[in-house]
Each structure stands twice: as structure tokens, then as C-alpha cells.
View 1 (tube, helix red, strand yellow):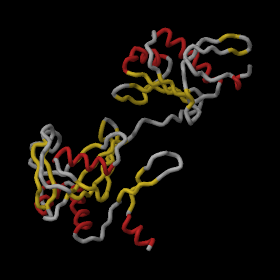
View 2 (cartoon, rainbow, N blue to C red):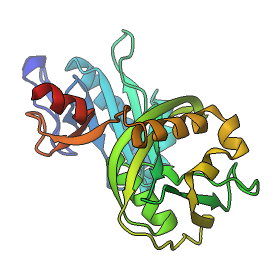
View 3 (cartoon, rainbow, N blue to C red):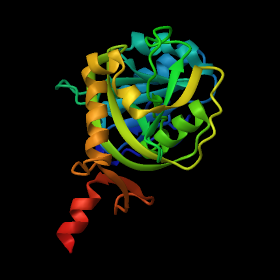
View 4 (cartoon, rainbow, N blue to C red):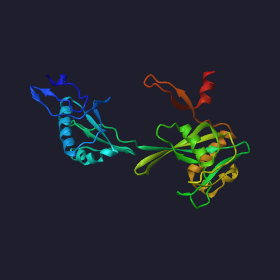
Length: 289
């Protein structure tokens, strides 16, 4: 049987034959979209047996012309990590329930993409009809204990849209319901979190309720504050990103010459669900009329 006709591994225990010689078992794997394989292990395994399977698998995948190898080890198989590392695998990323290790077979430069390089966050400007802005003081963090009233902020969860994260963070921290309006700006900060970068989106929201019920775990206090008082706080004037947030809000709400980016649902021929494209809908709608 030629190498090109060797069947792919579909289950643990499959044996391969080439030129009449029986090969050892290999690990179960599926092909990825980039010429590599993905191994998703779930059943307990002795490390020595795992090492034997791994070596045989690497030889087989090399013959098949595979490139990258991804091994997903759930937390209950942590005993196999050292074995994989000794065979040349390295860490790619980790989640609460698993560790992903990778290996590059060819003698060429590795093209396995790095782990996620950015953390995404939101800051919410919630302005009511009385020109009051919703602000909080935190129980921990860099702003704790300095008397600064800040915008509600937070990190976007995995699989969460930016607009949904802004609405959720405001609700969690203050109890106020809101409607998302637009993204006014975004800021990138390098090496912000364990070597990763931050992308922070400044969002404008419209309040749908007024009663404040602050979060007890993280929020010291919350209030509706006259926008002018928020704008003249010393830290707002000293820290340029905060100062720009004030200027953008005024340009958007009072002077009405600055338009942000609103989410518009879009479909794709590559996916079976809607995504969101953030764009300047005002100018787009004007140009189409």
C-alpha cells in the first residue's frame, strides 16, 4: 500500500500496514483546515503508553505530509503533559478545563498562529436627559481609594459581542438597564496584561431605567453625576484617554458633528449565524439616499 493510500486514524487501536509491516497504534486525530491534525484526548492513559503512541503518531503524520499537531489535554489528563513536552511539544494556550499543546513536524519555519494576543474591554458612557453621566467608584484596582468617579468598565467575555458586553457591564455594576447606541472610539495598549495587549472600546449607551442598585462585590458607590462635574475631575483632565472621552461625548451629543460606529448584523457564506459589522450608519445612510 502506498503512503498516499494509508487510511487516516479514526479510533484508538487502529493499525497501519505499509510494505507488509504492521505499525503500532496511533492516537486518534482529525484533520484541520491547514494541513495539520487535532488530537482531542478524553480517556485516562498511562504516560509510557502515551509516549509510544505519540512517537508512532508523529512518524505516521510525517509520512502523510502533515504540518502542525494540536493536542488538547483535559485537566484530568495533566499527567500526560510532561510526556508530550519531552517529545518536543510546547504550550499554546490554556483554558480552565484543558491545556493545548502544539508541535511542528516539517523542517521549515513554523506557521502555527500564536495564542490570542489581545484582551478586549469596554467602557460605557451612559448619559441621561438631565445631562448626568452614570459613574462608579471601585472597591479594588488602580482607582480604589483616590476618590475618582469613573465610567463603568469591564472585559468582554468569550463569544460575547462588544455591544452586549457594554450593556451587561453597566447592568452588573449599577443595576441600570441600557440600550447600546455606538462605539465612539477604541484604544490599544501594548503589554497590558501578562504580556498581552488590551483593546478598549469607548461605548455610548442610552439609559432605559434610572434606579441604581450597585454591585456589592466590586463597586463601592454609584451615582448619576452632572457631566460637567465628571469632566472637570483632576484625573479626567490629567489622563488623556479620559479627556478624549469627554470631548468625544460632547462632540457626539451636543455639537452633533461626530458619529460613532453602530453594530449592524451581517450574514456570511462561511458561517451559519449572524455577525456584527461596526460602521458609521449615519454617513452610510446619507450616501445611499
